Length: 120
Image (cartoon, rainbow, N blue to C red; front, side):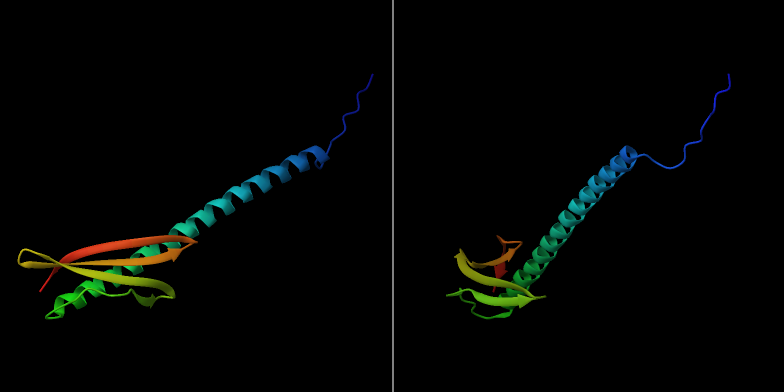
């Protein structure tokens, strides 16, 4: 009795469907990671810009002879990021301390940075 051995070439429908499911899931995971990475990058960039805006104001207050507290926040736009910057001057014994707060919004969330330092 002779057995005929058939060479099967190609893929079955089930193998193709399983491959498509694996590719779809892998693509979804990769896109999710890249979106998270992009959001974290944007948040980090906005935080850096807010720190620079606060440092700039502290430097400005240090150079003034008689710095005063802000009565209303000033709007600052740096790298297309809109921020509100306010500051207070407190007298602590013989030292004046400036506290600068920068508020900004990124990805729909409100964030703020606060810095303080001694001024003249």
